[in-house]
Length: 269
Image (cartoon, rainbow, N blue to C red; front, top):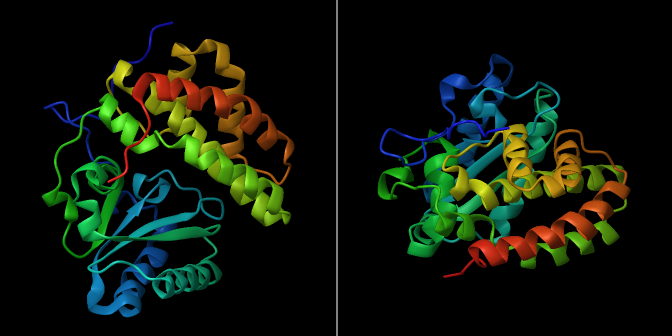
C-alpha cells in the first residue's frame, strides 16, 4: 500500500504552523480566556509571550479527556520558583475547569530558543507547533523549517537520554495517576519519534498520532505491533505497567539504535 501524499507544508515546502485560536472548541474557551488572564498576572513584565499547543488549538480536543498544553516564554531564564508557580497555576486551572484532564505549562527563555541549534528544536516547536495566545509571536524571528534529517535529529534524537529517566520513573511511580501520566508521555513520545524517523523520507509533517503510526508502520512493518501498542498507550493510557515494560524493553531500544544510525544523536548547544 502506498503512503498518502505529504501534508502539513506551505506552498514553499516549509512546514506549516498547526492550530489556531479560532479552532479551539467552545467547551475550552473559558479555560483559554482564564489562562490568557492569569499568565501575565503570574509572571508580570517578564512574560514575553504565551502559546497553546496540542489538541486544543488543533480543534481535536475532547472535553473531560484532553489535557491543556501551554508554553510561556520569559524574558529571563525561568527559576525553580517560576516552575513552581506554573505548576500551581495549572493545578488551579485543572480544578476550576472540568473540561480538561490535567496538563502542563512549560517555561522557556526567549534567548535560548533563538540560538541556532536550539532553534531546530524549541524554535521549531514555537514556530510550527504552537498557537500564539498573548504577546509578540517569537516565530517572526525564527526561520522556516523543512522535514529534514537535521530537524529529525534535533527534535527527537535524544532517546538515549530519555530512556534511563523513563525506566527510573516506571520503578518509582506507583500511584495510578502517576503511572497513567507516564504511560501517556511514553506512548506519545515513541509514536512521534517513530514518525520523525521516517519524516524526511515521507517529506511532510503531521501531529496526528494515528497517521504518524501508519506512516511508521509502512516503512517499518516489522515493528508494527509494538508501534500500535505505543499508539494505544498514548491515546488510552492506563496504570497497568505491563505495556510500558514491553515498550521500554523492546520498541524503545530498537528505535533509539535505528534513529541514531539514520539521523544521529541530538546536538546540544
